[in-house]
Image (cartoon, rainbow, N blue to C red; front, top):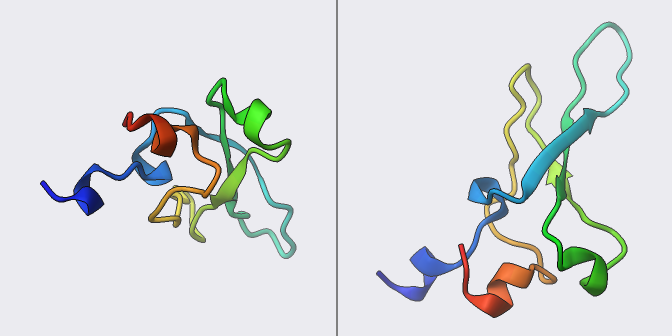
Length: 78
């Protein structure tokens, strides 16, 4: 494995949780909002927002990398 394979990704992380959806108009589903619930995140930043999901019912997270402030990057966890 190279370093790119070992790098943490929010999309696959156990700490990334979906909380709510965006408001929409015209009876469509909004994109889901994803937040990081890692215990160390509050010490790093006050905003634990990770990103939005794709348009659609399941709305998976579209972010393919990790945020700059991710505590797993520093610890080397996954």
